[in-house]
Amino acid sequence: FFLAINNFVERKNYYQLQLNKDIIKYVNIKDYLDYESKLNENCPTFYSCYKPYDEIIQYCDDLMNEFPQLVSKFQIGETYEGREIYSYLISTQDKVPGENREPREPTLYLEALQHAREWIATPSLIFGIESLLRGYANNNLTIVHLIDNFDWVYTPVVNIDGYNYTWTTDRFWRKNRHEFSGGIYGVDLNRNWGPNDTWCTTGSSTNKRSDTYCGEHAFSEPESRSIAEYLDEKRGIIKAGVDYHSYSDLILWPWQYTYNKTNTADYNYFTQVGLKMEEAINTRFNKKFISEQGSDLYEHSGGFIDYNYDKNRMASFTYELRGDKFNPPESEIIFSGAESFQGIVTLAEYIIENGPLPN
Image (spheres, rainbow, N blue to C red):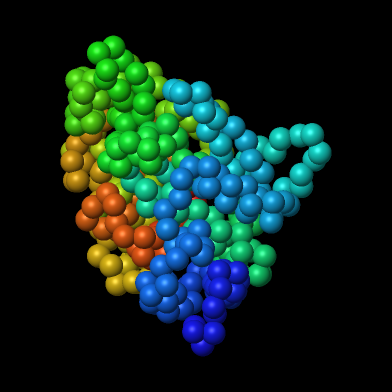
């Protein structure tokens, strides 16, 4: 029957139909990939190939326009080069003309591409967002339960300047594009978070040429600073956050700056929910994701998870998505999106059933 799908529009409509039928399981993934590998033309769906920034935001805007009662858009910050950083809110609360909606308690926050070269992070995140929206529209009971019990905020691309640079100049650029004297560029945004007493203490560099340069001080960079200000403002409302990275097949949680453990209650909480996320992800495609304390990968300070756990009492996680390189084949996008979404579903369900991280 695939041979009867002869043009781009028909293929796109077919795949969308499959997406709508069962977004969590994503039926016919293997057939989808087998067929695409033979045709390899025109990238018929958003998840068939990597996209430049403008197309990413256009796709997120298209989802918002398709589900206007659920999704709204706002500017969360600005990049070093002056680009607006956009985030999206998913909520069942009524929209009031001329008023911006604010997330309600409890909210789950997702973000991707602090590190510019980790391209698979963004479509993986957006796959989960689209899964929520289409699942809700199709009255999938699991998804309805999640959206009725949570508001969701997501930032598809944090490091827009760096990401654009990976498309035009250097595919493996990591940092933002902060310009220093002597032709030196960039701060590692995931070394630039506070708190001040642990910033730039481990696994970070004070050398501006380093890929892990931590900046001149905590939150020296507008990207990390603006998002932190938003999350600080929503302290107590946002109960959990996931920062999408690649690669290594890992689910990481605090502490990352030290091998010391958090207090016993929090350590047990992270261990329990992390293991459930691990199991859910691995069941999807028989991968071998591991949930572990962030420093078990390596110590580093100034990261998203430590700051938001310490400052905002968020159950904070880093995804290191599937693969063993920064440029995985485009055929991995669908798998990465589907399995990482299973982990997000599990995280949200755990909070609904057991409550947020204890105060």
